[in-house]
Image (cartoon, rainbow, N blue to C red; front, side):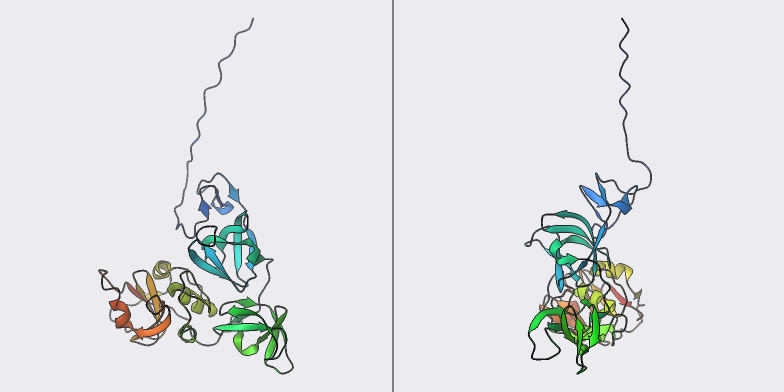
Length: 299
């Protein structure tokens, strides 16, 4: 009778090698899943290859959690791309391609990729059924929405797009938006303040900066602290502020209208408003430093 061999010793495994740390808002990993691009850098039980989709609603809220009562953290505009990493029920989890910002949105508000030709450069525009001011409204698209447009109507006032028509004066070819970021920000005065908003319909402080610079083809990070860290060039102590400069406060940012007045989406007015920089800074008096940074972005 032969002898029974002993089982091999138990093997143990451990992660080794390079690992990265990243901002939780833009590093595509959660407890059960990560983007395949993080394989070998961060551990996750599963990795997913992103499925690229495009926003088809005029604007889609992005939430911190997969339910409508969850805090909104950003927004996806019509025509912007979203990398889907997971779908559960009606909700998709992933990130915006333009700024890598993570969150949950309704999968039904995503569609096949398309290449937009124009962008809404007015505070908002209406899609109508025909090339006439008397035709019924089909949809409203806020500033920042990207649209596929075609022929201009015989009257020259409307352009064909999205199975309808939109006013020519409300749209610009992508990359050819007129005016400065400060000009565009001023056109949004009165737009309601909304946490996570970044459109001509509802907007927060950093969303305003991201939107108006983005219209000019300049990509900005999503949140105020990210913009303070990685956007623009710091001004020296002796440098005077000028129109278009950015001023950063604790958790807040605004755009200078001139050397003394600030354009910003703020909870004090619950809207985009203009006020003296000194008045805005006074609301941060409880902090050790009211103004954290002053930066300039070359357009």
